[in-house]
Length: 168
Image 1 (cartoon, one colour):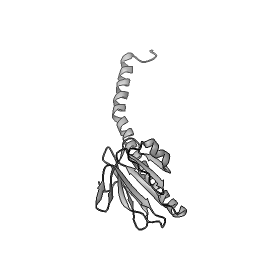
Image 2: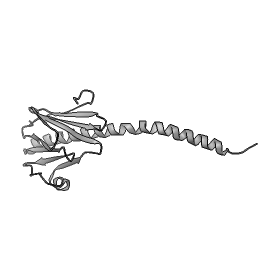
Image 3: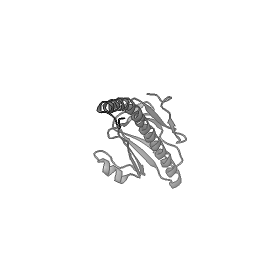
Image 4: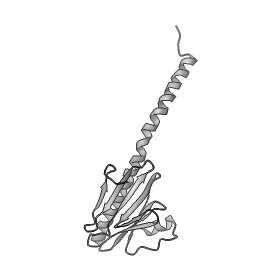
């Protein structure tokens, strides 16, 4: 009666485990990119709702600035400083809220009226009466999945649209 396994048996089991993990690992890690996009979209929409709330309660303008080149969002009260040439750390120090997008999540485009912004800065202003300058902001990941954040210019309400209904 033998005790244990032969070297061949152990090698066969290791080969089977490595083949299974090679096929399963990508399926497990793939949803993480979509989750990062959804989380980032919710954080930005939440920060914008909070900015609107602060503008009304404190009777002071709030401006949300989106940097399409460096992929961050910042909220400023009152006048927005001149951001040209400022490093991200300088912007962060002067902002009430600063949110750098996670790796793999990009600001795709912003739309205000007939204007589409894909590079540079885009601003959404929340006024003391609850209204806003309005617009739409699209976030996307490398796989092409996207979310749309729309800001109603009359009510200042911020809406997050699921990827299935968002325009790409």
